Length: 594
Image 1 (cartoon, rainbow, N blue to C red):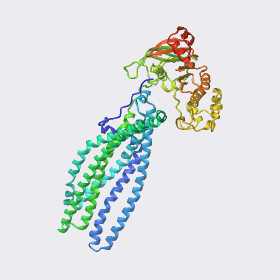
Image 2 (spheres, helix red, strand yellow):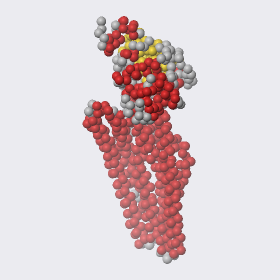
Image 3 (cartoon, rainbow, N blue to C red):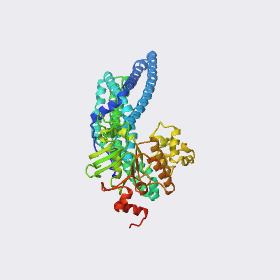
Image 4 (spheres, rainbow, N blue to C red):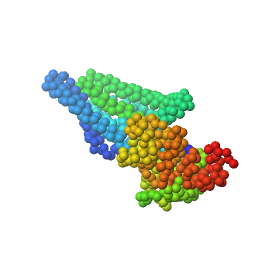
């Protein structure tokens, strides 16, 4: 089996230009455009209502309280109350649809990403870290939702508040407005100075978070091995190291943000103090009224708050851009193995397999298979043996068309697999792997994985045919027994029997047994062997085996070493040659070589 290469995390600056990222985001948001438009309208209404309130205070003070006009005071107070109630109603509607769009968006984005991932070639998953992919599907998609749904819509309201407040401030008092604007250059300079640093630190945060997710996933998946080899302390040290790096990245981001926000607060406070001081002088001099000053101070906060919010969101937007880029990185990966236009849809397969001078390498440099040629006729059993790394599993990958050969051809029933639709090919192949992958659910559910539409009676019939019905019936709830995560409540032999039952339920013309006996305990070995014999009957079977008890019954055996076939023949013929196969067999069976 080839060595997996880890997918390198994204580093440094954005690889996808900002304009392209936002354009692609807009396409993702297109299905929700009408709901978004409605939310935008309600958000703008909320902003406009918020702008009316300070002016009503000004009217109440200048035209009501100062002049002793109770009618004006009552009307201003009533309108203010109406504005508050209206703002509450519109804000409730806006909040609901924020959540609705956000949750719907992240659901659809995850579905698109997951659907794309499951269609990628085998090579992508060989190079990728599981934890990193989990982080992209879960936390990165959620981060995009948090910012680009509620955040962007809120920005619309902030812009309206900012622009509206500025216009009203100019109407109320031009001189005070100009005093207010004197601090804007300082805010722009501060934001500009922190821009590059924000982008760098939040890219690092996403990378380290992804690495931490990967470490947790790897440790939980390998907990038995960790405990079996007493590596708990080492595993903890490795986890703490990655966790500390993630913590340091987050602290660095917090430090940057902690410097930035107080700086902006100080600038805004200075601006507000200037308005109070200068406005107070104007009131004393009789150049403006108390009502105008009170309203102006309120409008100043309406003006500065959106600026502060927009600037405060900058770091969050940077983190979201990184998350969005990480999502698009996966969505931009193209399958290495693709169906040609007009590729053949296989309707029926007899099981005639031919490898013609096949060469293949995973890295396009070092050949794993070197001129491999063999033929398996319908119903024949071919055993492939050889040392680890010789290329045995690679042959299976090419037959399933997880990869295409660099040179030569792989044919099924005379069809070059490059010209065949992948899914139509795999419908006719049954696979019993070394490590059976079971899914949460019952025994029955896991057998039905190969044929979801099968009835319960068909499942029972298959198990009876394999001679394993009584074994399943002895489980606590029989076929309805919950097997736990990855089948952890079952023995290795029981898992393999479920895998064999899956294959027989599918009833494929081509069968692949990839080290199907290697993890089976001696107590169930004979049961599994008998079930496999039943499964292989009248099927073209490829057997990859270290245990030669399964290989010796094959019609043909090939011995592969360093990517080449060095011996080929029947068990009897190869034993007579007294070559590599003979030495392997006699050593394994404990037979003295003569």
